[in-house]
Image (cartoon, rainbow, N blue to C red; front, side):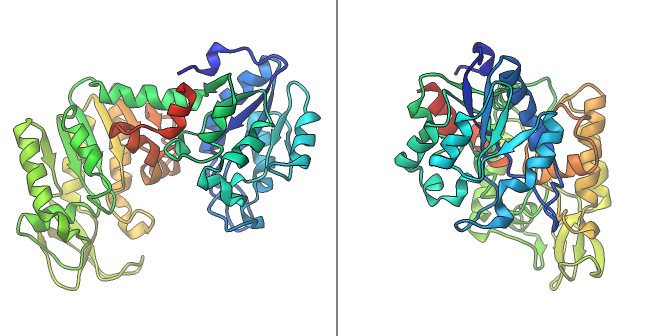
Amino acid sequence: MKTIKDFNFKDKKALVRVDFNVPLDADFNVTDTTRLKAAKPTIIKILEDGGSAVLMSHLGRPKGVEDKFSLRHIVKTTSEILGVEVKFAGATVGADAEAAVAALEPGQVLLLENVRFFAEETKGDEEFAAQLAKLGDVYVNDAFGTAHRAHASTTIVAKHFEDKFAGFVIEAELVNADRVLKGGDKPVTAIMGGAKVSDKILIIEKLLDVADTIIIGGGMSYTFAKAEGGTIGNSLCQDDLLDYVLELEQKAKDKGVELVFPIDNLLGDDFSNDANTQVVLRGQIPDGWEGFDIGPQTIEKFSKIITESKTVIWNGPMGVSEIPLYATGTIEVAKAVKAATENGAFSLIGGGDSAAAINNLGFGDDVSYVSTGGGALLEYMEGKTLPGIAALEA
């Protein structure tokens, strides 16, 4: 796979797939600029070479054209981050988009309208991809967060270019994932959270070959607790996986990998910030109560393991972290990952809620790498082929 380091963009118009799917508040202000900042080095490299950048991205999941999903809302913030005026096309393909690109001079940046305003984008439509391809001399994919989707702008469009490259974001994502997959400094600790075991089956299986310890938290931990004969009240559980998780525990034992589960859980009687709560030992959750976070003993245990690790990968919250009452476990794990990094560990944060927790606490610069693509990172680490990456190698 060629990267943009291998190419001089002088007098070239680079069609760049970025991931500017950023959160906006009610007034359309960008509330998390992580992805915009991540794309900056790639864009600046193109401009400094003497080229121009035509940026394309999606925002949200619009049904047709919806102004609330227009990329015009992020133009001002993107311009401020890049330190370059970002022009806005107001069109994605067609005559207006082509005219805007034709007027673009070296050193300038143009942002196209949301590619997902067209249903053809997610369908991977060949004709739509051909229309996009008219907007650049060379193609750069730097949208790792969508590299696992065979969409028109992430995969199909690459067929139309002789010169196609990975940007710095994609390069960094793969390098950092491989640093874990190929065996990081020991001890290697993986922290797996989130709601469902089924979402993490393949990654846990893969990590059994590289990790010394796998911490299991979040909603997925209750399936393990029930499988072991515990009571979990109204907590999340995938009953169809009860036998599987016991097999997984045996696989880990056979490979000498320690699976670490919560000691205690914080329970609530409601999915709200003003619920009644109590702390009980794992597997002793009474009827009418639901596990929403890890408890204080667990926080202490998990934190000790993490801070003593030399390689850490974290994907998934320890509880319902969007509700402050149930966010303590996730926050404390984030602090432990930060501490481990300060102690010399390599730490990879696997996107999604884990990345949000790290960034919301202001720890983004205190860990080794924060992935911009949760789903794509998981699929890559599971050993799956990412269409957006494969298209650059074809």
